[in-house]
Structure formats: structure tokens, C-alpha cells
Image (cartoon, rainbow, N blue to C red):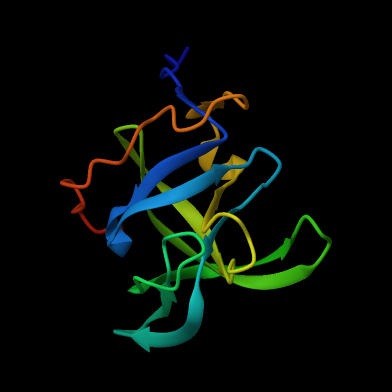
Length: 157
């Protein structure tokens, strides 16, 4: 029998980091109603580099602000057809990157979409939380602020 790791307890919203994308802090809605995780992205552009499909995009990581702008590139994992809570279907690019929350780091898949009209720049969905996270829906910011000094991790291949 495999020993189960203790789970990280979070609130319904948390501060997290995406170190491989140079985003030291982003407010995340921990959304047990969403299957996929989503990241705000604008000016999405597909390209090929060294024979691998990649995607370039920009993000405004702070809610309701257009500054700062962070320019990102990542390997394209694929595309996923996502149905939003209002029933709108959209084909989105998917990237895989390191996610940092509560002192823990693990790889997650993120769909890229324009979330300008939404309250949070990022949603953490059930796939990314599976076997790692318990959510206390009456709490917020249980995990504290991300460790901004540790923004470098080894590239994921």
C-alpha cells in the first residue's frame, strides 16, 4: 500500500507563483467547480523553435490592472476544448509549468484565455489539485504570500 502524502489545505482564494513564467505572485481562485486550470493570457502567438511547438503570450498578473505586463513563452502541450461556466465553448492552448503554493511546487497544466472580465487572473482547477489539496471554502489566503526569493526552478521537459 502506498503511503499517502499529507494534503495542503487552502482557502477559496490564495496567493501563488508561477516561477518558470517569471510571475512571483498571482491571486488564484481555487475552483473545485472547474476541471481545468486557466491563466489570463493576451496576444497569444504560436511558433516553432528547434522543432518544438511553443506559445508566446503576455499576462497582466494583477487584477483590474494593465500593468505590469509579463511576457512569457512556454512549450505547447496541446489544445483543449473548454466549456466555461456560462456555457461558452472555446479551444484553448495548454501549457505545463511549475506552480508554487504554500511552500510546495508541482507541475500543472494551464489553459490560456483572456480573463480580463473575470475577477481572478488564474483559476486552479480540480486536475491540478488532485491528491494534493484540500479546500476550506470559508477561508482565504491560508497559505500566505509566495516566497518571492525562490523564483528559479529547473526547466520542465
